[in-house]
Image (tube, rainbow, N blue to C red):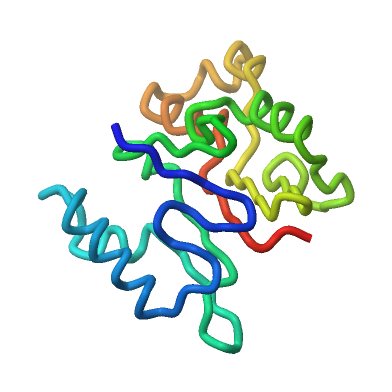
Length: 161
């Protein structure tokens, strides 16, 4: 499995801060030609990378979804972002640079300003929740879907502060 590096102050994979839309599109085309699978929607990588540009048309924000873990090991400082449970991931990255504890979305969104890193998940699930009646009463398919919330759903980068 190939590695997709998430590098503070630089970018994610081949997509780097400061690139133009044309340069990003070239990167997306390379990903598409190398990794596109028959069951993917036509523009999978174009939508998988959420890119925002500044007023000069240069990359200033990059976001990727956890679905990319099917093709890549997504590493931030040698930490597998999408295969490390949220509680552990927060602890590990907080040791490197503290997260913004004043953020009103804590538990679903963690911002590490010194790294320009943002971790997001739609809902919070803890290991102990797996033993609770409300969880055990869910249909198995819903349990499986809910268990995804033990991990983060997306990672974003912007320039560190």
